[in-house]
Length: 261
Image (cartoon, rainbow, N blue to C red; front, side, top):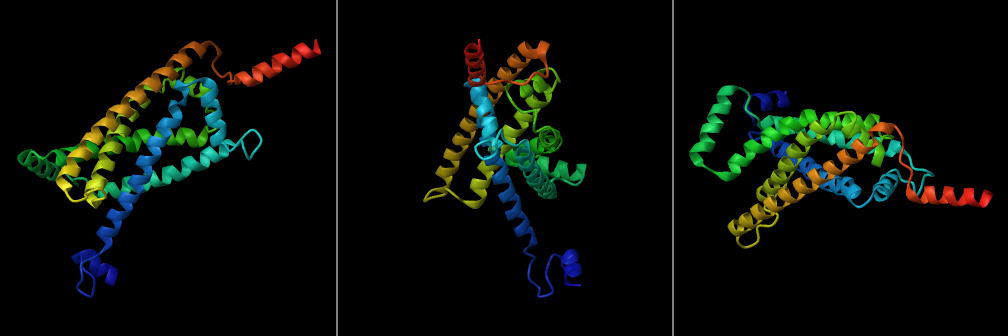
């Protein structure tokens, strides 16, 4: 009965305002922080291809726990993707609470934002749009990783991007992720006052500069990385499906053959 009363009038039977919205806000912030930091780390790991194919291969095997399991296990990557997907869906569901329920509400919010001419309010609209896009684009990407975790590597990833025509999706996903993520982390810092110090206004200005720098950095890194995978996929297209063999194994195989000869 108490839940029913709280649902209708927004207060508990003790006449106190419900704490549920605050708890949901906290959970939304926590899941957003986890996803934002994860995406930055993910981008740095994926960009290992810019160093060399061997380095990217070693990173892949490290994530498969090859230092514990002989040859590594792609199932660990699938398990990680499932956990991230669960957090992703939770964050999306919580974020939908604040979206306008109909066109009339959208008109009111848009008019209010234009009238105020407030940059942070406009950033919210950007974040809402990119978040809506990510719900579809990110779900596709995570599903692919969950079901094809054994198809990650210099050639396998490049083949998927180029030969399987996934690069248009990744371009859109990259744009959505980087704008949504950096704006989201900036708004978290402002909302919870993590770095306010003695002058919150000066801190906000600094955080905006950092946000812009991070957005440019990760967008440039992302597009350069995507271009590298596309180039590898283009060159490898005639041999699509062939798995990458690291240089160390090729040298070892060649040396062994010479000894046998």
